[in-house]
Length: 326
Image (tube, rainbow, N blue to C red; front, side, top):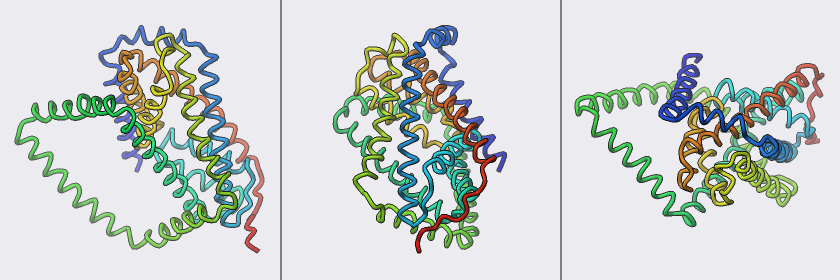
């Protein structure tokens, strides 16, 4: 298990290295040091507000399955989950459920159901935003997919020896066979627990008392993520002229990057955001500067709030079971 996470972290730093490899690191660092911290703070504040709305939305899911959890309980659990993701990718979802098991005695199966629902909602919103980009900025996105992804991949394949390519394909088939065999051996033990959790999650979103308020929180979360990207444009001269469309594209690209199983999106976040800004005539190195600033601000706020939340949870007495079904 530790080896897997070490490999993922290595991949993340590898992508980060490749992104910065041919760039003027001294120039990038100089621009970062001259960044307007006021706008960086505003950007980080927008992320903080988005986290508040996410905690409020998550609390509504618990209330719909008869657990009257306090706001601060869900907020601390959420932030600790983000903190855990900086160390181990995708571990944050389990971590925040474990926090509420400790503080409020809520069963993991119930918590996992709400988290699954939350993630499905986020994926749905992200896919919707992706569709909007394709509809309204088709030429830009198509150019990125064709030039950056398709042609780059085709070029890489042409440089690979035919026998090496056959060996890679064969190894992937063998690897896939072992993965399927492993999953089959585990599925009987975990299927029931996953099914129960998923069922509870789906029930939680269909039973929320105020769907209007729930929708308001959902939209608000993504609006403040968007504002975080937009306001950070003003932190450095090279991105100050960018508008809402660039911020929207950068948000979608960065969100897809954060889906990757890499600690804190290290490397892939920087590369994707820089590539998104290239579509708006921002040089790749200046896009990296922007990506480094906003990513660093998000990591710092996670470390700060996560540490505070962790101390609060560890020193707080359990509230006991808060099921209000009766």
